[in-house]
Image (tube, rainbow, N blue to C red; front, side, top):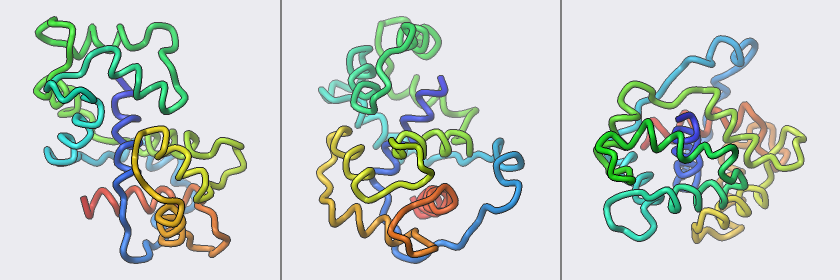
Length: 183
């Protein structure tokens, strides 16, 4: 089920628009102390994520739609994980995840800091600890978002605290925290 939360972040990233410079919110031992921090998205945010999964707009997510999102993110269906997720999430056992089931999964969890960190590594393809505007653009294109490279450059500049043109983990964490609060 962690993939469900992970994909929530992927979609949230594509919708982030930051108007002011976030402060460095995480420093020092944030990787240990903040791993359990959570954020509970609003029903509106959850509906947007659900609608992204529901590509045929029939009000339910099929396994093939879920796999398509994973594939777009470069994840694929490792070890039949989608079937396992559906066994747990598909409460009425109709073979689909409807919005009510989707919400039920997220009631207890929220979004954990380690999920944000996982999202960071999804963007940082070369594993250098930095995300470029091109990296952001590439991932958003795979998700089917119509975002220009210039928009991605603006996003990166909005959170780039050291002005090197790249988004590091601290910048990314601040961006995600800020965008969720602005939701």
